[in-house]
Length: 631
Image 1 (tube, rainbow, N blue to C red):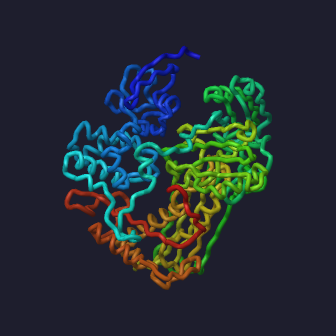
Image 2 (cartoon, helix red, strand yellow):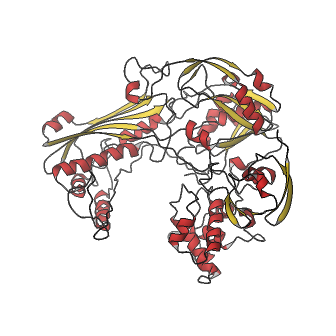
Image 3 (cartoon, rainbow, N blue to C red):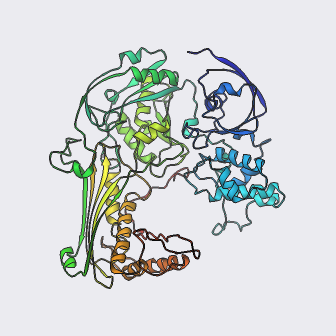
């Protein structure tokens, strides 16, 4: 260990003197040594801006700055903006404008916005946008953030009174049509809100995870002796430490807490270490010895369905998670009567959620033997029941507490690491904490399902759809997770809100040696909708028909029946399509799906397409209420 360096700095007006390691970052110095957790870590690479602070008045990314560089400097963090407990003008404006959603980016965004107005008190929206370019928000779309900065600018320049930050007048009990502020916004804009990664408990241990470097291999042996000898290590767990049902998942409990017998994707957890320091935990992980027997792997879902492909799970020798077919009418008769038949294949890729808060959690066991896990779970009740079975404990001995969610988008619906934390807490009888690095989060957690859709549609020459035959294959990755539900929703909504008398769709969820796929906004329907709407544009082009006209000709109306036999009591498809067409100043004609330029909006020389994605809003699953503003 390198010799410690003594530094003295002024932090939020207070003189601070500390000894720091030469490798320690300013971010860790503020968070760990000074307990100023308003400064967040989102990427660790200076890209996202959640770690923004001021050093001698200049905006700096603290994740890139050595703590030793703070010697003799004046440092300001988001906690220092509120003077005597009163929020700054920028913080008040962010609160008033509704600029915070998950809130994880907001402390850094407030710091960047304050710096922008200090540099130019008259900054217009374009300059504000440019000056905030080093800060990322995954929730808001930025518009309310820009609104907030403009509001603060106008207040500071005397163009708005303090009353602008007050609530709108409303009659008691009347909330419809009134801008209601988020009750958690003040803690978000001041940096006071504590996410799971901000939690600190007495005697807390730090956790690191050993992960597989192979996509498919048999585990011959695990040797933790050298790792256990590392100073500071208090506990190591593997699959052998699971006392109950070693499996979790939304529809099928096929994923072990840590790999048992085999690893099935790169990054799968094999062991977890709890130690006094993060450095000790990392050192111990390096010393765990694993002997592997490499196995053939399969990465393409269509190849995984072919006889003789590598098998991931013995209970699914065909690598099929789920096949769901829906059929109405006779598609072959429909195609026989069609004047035009269009066939095409569409693919969508794996998509990362990229929430700014990476996966994190804290677990401990209390004096009554109750295991408590704090994590930004979007499905705490389901996770609690799974943990009860995994730990072999009665449900009243397991608590799942939902910490604030720093962005979810479905990515925190599936239980990934909470079981490891609970096992370590039970083994060490001390609080344990795990925070994923950005690299871990991106490489090892569930993503949007990649898909491949084969679409065949038959139409009359005047644009009536007579038949559709669709096959959509979802890559579920190594474990089931949410795949069955994704397939179900994809086939239910796969035909779009159109009348198709002869219809067949087959949805397949497939196991591969890719990272598991899980929940993501739209939950499987986006992939099939993309194929349907793109296919309609191609059909319109082949028919020489305006794409709006083709959709309106086949649109569902109240009283129509969907391909799942549901009768629509109401349907605004025609009204919404017409409104979208008129609002975009659409130029009627053949669509330019092959890349031709069209002046759709804004006059001569402007090229902007009109994008409309109709969908059925029909129930496909039970939706539990979300806590703590989970998105």
